[in-house]
Length: 109
Figure 1 (tube, rainbow, N blue to C red):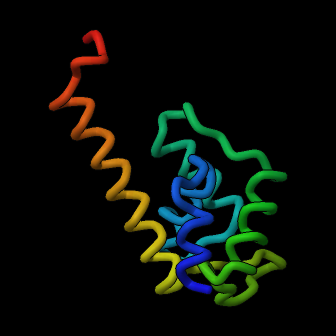
Figure 2 (figure 1 turned 30 degrees about the vertical axis):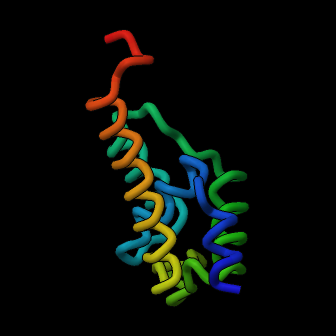
């Protein structure tokens, strides 16, 4: 099952990436959205529908877990499986970036 989950998220959507990345610390949906806007200088915004749909899916798949509820807000944190999936995606992005910078034959700078 773990390998199947890893394949589903390779590669992952940008929204899913940022949500998992933010959930390396405990957060709720609105704080994730705010942090993503700050991290990307407003270039990436995650709509409420995307946010809560993604949170629901990645919780069901075991990538995050509900830690507690606070003032009707659900607070989540990445799981060990989520960390593995996130690290796989980070390594994929690093490889792509490295290939662009080193191989650039197909890419006009």
